[in-house]
Image (cartoon, rainbow, N blue to C red; front, side, top):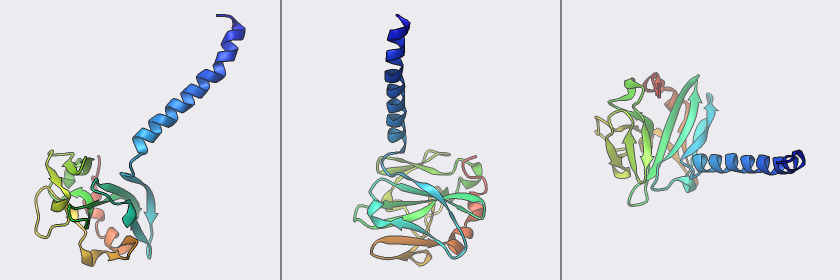
Length: 164
């Protein structure tokens, strides 16, 4: 191949590489499953837009007082939104005690336990279940669910070894 032909193809190769990277990023970050993390300070709230919550879990990453944590929200079969911390009541200290969505199910990354939205935010459900965020722990409006800094801060301990 001549040098002139190589010089003409270089912009096409660069453009193709940029498009491939953009497509990969779109695949990895699409679907609204993980919201970009934010820092929550005293007096602030984590805001979960109700319109973004579906039958597939959405994850909301936050940092509170330097501790990374995540809240999950999912709609059950009746359309109710259920919320919990994305850390397992049994497996949290392992560092792998968090959940990933597999369709409409959640899967513990430590023990592999699978469960549905109907099993999230259930009183008295110990064992391998996410720590629930009950109605009294959050504020709901027509458009959003708000989880306060104080409530998030109180959960710092269960995220001490999270994803390590």
